[in-house]
Each structure stands twice: as structure tokens, then as C-alpha cells.
Length: 285
Image (cartoon, rainbow, N blue to C red; front, side):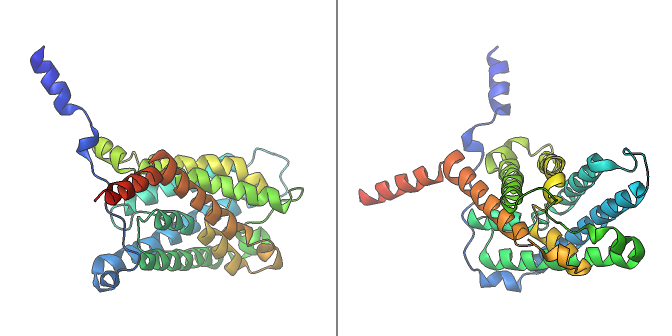
């Protein structure tokens, strides 16, 4: 019995088994001299390119399949589109997490920056790489499917008829909150230390979060929750409808990411309490 207890204790997880990483510096010029930094930028660029290429093709393919068809169940449907977005995020996060962290979304990068998980220069350069990758990804779709691309809206995010700007903005804020909150929870150091032997446990819930949010918000905004995705489609399609209300797909995701970062870091992880405790301890000496 004592031996069994020892084995159980050896295999159990405690708070001592992990340590929170130190906050990332606001600006670290040394990053610019490291190949790993540029490798991460390339990974973010290619991942976002592939993400937009597959998902926008799926959206356009679905619209072309149901065009003029009496079968309302034709094509992959909203469920299939949601699976395409969620599935690609799962695959790409799994592939790039060890290289760049697998952000593939400026809102995710922004949330992690606010939580001091990445430096300012890395956050800015990631966002640039993601936006460029998104534009190139949609550009490939247009190059390969030019006639369908123009006819079926280019996969651009637009506010659906019957919904107000406030509703669209709220949908983007809440949807991005769900995604970024999931990212924080899935990559929490405590969880990572406990579940490190199961490598898919971080990408899987992140992909599912994207899938679930798309199911809920495709009928409202087409689901942005990723400014690079919205920008890439708007730039290549470049019609007035794609730019009308485009600010929603930037303000909403960044606001949702900021709320998620605050909620996870300062409420769930008690960041404010820890900071206050450290301040009081310093005052005693």
C-alpha cells in the first residue's frame, strides 16, 4: 500500500511541477539577430496563407454548389464551412506551435502581447506576416478560380442583412473572446506541464473553438474573429461591399482578445492579486 502511494504521488501533478515563464520584454532588439525569429515569421506567413486558401475555397465552392439548386442541403453547408475553418486551425496550430506558437491570427497575437507572452516587436511582425499571408492566400484562390471568385463574393466578411452594426460588433467581440480565452487556457503553463505527453491537447480545443464560433456567427458576419482573414479577403475582392463596416472585423476581434487576456491573466490566474502581494512584500523591506 505504501509503495502504491509512492507511485501515485510520483505520477501526480502539483503546483511545484511548473513555473510561470517570465514576462516577455516589451522590446528586445536581440530577436532581430536570431534565425528563430525569422523562421517564426515565415511559419506564420505560410500558415495564414494556407488557412485562407483552403477556407475561402471552401466558402466559394459551397456557394457555387447551391447556386440555382433547389436542394437546400446541397454542398458542404454551414457545418462544412465551420469544419473547414476549425479543422485548418487545428492542423496549422499543431504544425507551427513549436516554431512560432501557432498564432495565425492578429487578435491572438494581440491578446498574448497584452499578457506579456510575446514582445512588441514580435507581435507587430507576426501581425504583418499574418496579413501578408492572408492576402497571398486569397490571391491564390482568385488566380485558380477567378470566375467563381468574383461571382460568389470572394469569401469576404460582410454584415448580413437584418443585423445592426452593434449586433455584428458584439458577435465579433464574443466570438474572439471564446477563441482567445481557449488559447490562454490550452497553453496555460500548469496545463502544459500536466498534459505535455498528449501533444494534440492544445491545438484540438483551439480548433474546436473556431469551429463552434463559426457555427454561431456565420449567419451574422460570416465570422471574422481574425483581422488577417477579413483583410485578405477584402483586399483581393476589393469591392465596396467588402469594405463597408470593415472596421468591425478589427475592433471586434481586438476588443475580444483584450477582454480574454484580462479575464485569464487577472481574474483566473489572479495576476492583479499576485502583483499587489509582491508590492506589499517589497514595502516591508
